[in-house]
Length: 455
Ligand SMILES: Nc1nc2c(ncn2[C@@H]2O[C@H](COP(=O)(O)OP(=O)(O)OP(=O)(O)O)[C@@H](O)[C@H]2O)c(=O)[nH]1
Ligand SMILES: [Mg+2]
Image (cartoon, rainbow, N blue to C red; front, top):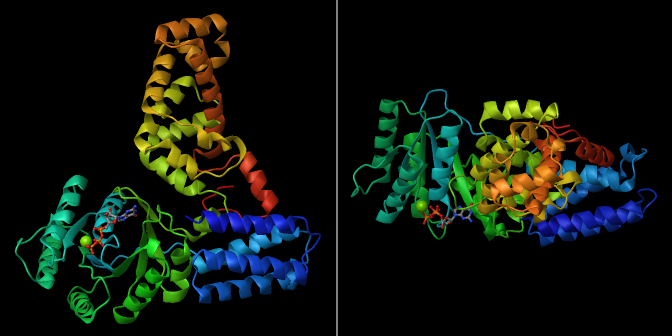
């Protein structure tokens, strides 16, 4: 997602780099290109207009008569404006004063409501809540079954009710009673979708809203449908009142226009992104991170979150200390590799990283299960002393290790190289801070500090 927009914006910045200073002429040229890039990314024309006007005003304003280079100025202004249209700060889920908090997931057919109900239940459970799910989609028996299967996979509770039940209202009420009785603090209500917004659907959702007084009405939209997603969000908000949006299928080749438009057009924030079919493919939406992603800085923060979720916290802290002390040994490397297996395909993680510093070129590294097994075998064949200090592993030791692990000296060499590289990489992003190289790079771009003490 956003690849084209990223590329085009970077080209604009690059062109400006040659300019001595910002003038009305070169700025207008840049603005024209930014405008085209946004429209091509399927951003709503009203948003584009507003965006361009804001960038122009800031760029031409007195505040830019500074020592900054034109390209630096424009990157900063564009980034700030991107964050603004994306929502300025992270919009968190709200919870009722008195549990259970009721959350509806609404939207058109096939937008991802049921899947997202499961993902959200998982996310809530992992963030200190105890969700109960219910499907109020009585029109297709398979719809309720679909959520039951997800609940079973997740090992999270669902109110199934009478399989023949024909009244969504009754089902939802029963589910809330169940939530109260079993002390569940969030009730997630998956609702039926329609091909188009029609009166019957709105009527039904209106009744459900009246009866259950949800704290959140989350509009689930398929990002691939672009401006149609924005239009239906607008319509749902007008007729029902939504409290937030979840854009699904952001892993596909959506151009990103919906994500960039929805906040301005509906006035309601994006709260989560669906980034895959699996149940862990849900990310809280962070405007600043998205802006960085669009500007091609990669999404280091999301990456760190993912890594941290998979890695045992205590162990991660211990590891962080070691890295800081530069005591990250081959043994730790082996443990890290074992942990990495839990995170998922390394390539998809690497794709999220910025193209900078020691990470450059790492994107082509493919780590498969077999390789991890081999690496673990090699490290197991070392003596404890060798594992603590790789510098002592000379030629004859390498030959012995290769023999012991059933590998070749080349493979041992390769592993040692990878270890040194990993050591550098770990230093770059483990533990919630970015390495010196990234900080330096960001300093050059004159970007404001990232949240979470990332600089
Ligand atoms: N790639 C990708 N697929 C998704 C995502 N979210 C949902 N899907 C897929 O989209 C399809 C429809 O998802 P559902 O959750 O059944 O959609 P729904 O809104 O409940 O559909 P109805 O109940 O028929 O209205 C399924 O094949 C999901 O696997 C996502 O973030 N990424
Ligand atoms: Mg469904």
